[in-house]
Length: 313
Image 1 (cartoon, rainbow, N blue to C red):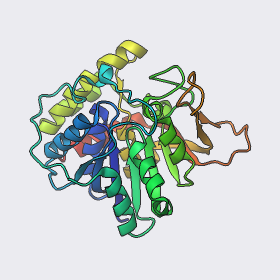
Image 2: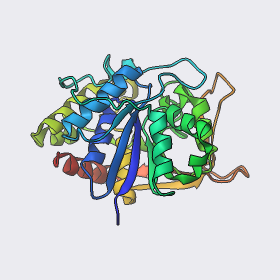
Image 3: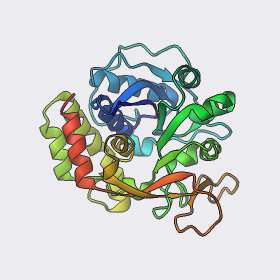
């Protein structure tokens, strides 16, 4: 099978960083065409910086990193320094990046790549708010039919919200953008909190990262140690969920995941439930399915894959 050709759209974020590292460590299955940064976990100047730091950590200065939208389509930006720290990559002491930021705008890169590459050959992998993706679709509607698939981290159903009682962070930051994406007609695979909260970095799993003994392994262990303090306190769990690496793991080993094709609608009107992903898990409406909504994961298999691939870098 040829490698899946992807654009990673991201707001790093420690878990975004691990997702990027997993993709870069898996060239047989994944070809990263570019990394587009968006405002989300931290503001855009930090997300584009963090994406370049991770590329350099992986020894992949050749991957273009581009800055995109600095604010949601129609709402003020909400960030998550309370989870990810001031820089978004708090934990390890990583050097400032020296690789240049590509001077193209991320939205232009998404549009140009989808127009240039053969239709149906590029998969979009959003790990943060969907602002860049939706803006590209609004500016260039001709590209929508050229997208092979969207595999994203966002939303929740049984786990409901992590930033409000009803909404998951990525969708809440730009619900209008999420609504555009979910109504696009593109084949979508969703990694919601329902599955990512089953991918917990326990002490033993974190020790396995550190035991790799490389700068990547040690940095990932330090990232997840910092990241987990918030979730352990909030949820009383034995570790932090690794949300975003579920996206890249699905591209490599979809057999590790199970879910249902359901209809997913995004709430954009009510401030009480703004950004809620209303997933028709039980098929109680007549709305046509528009997404594969993942509900379960082989967590041991997921962490075995992650540890094996990170050791390659």
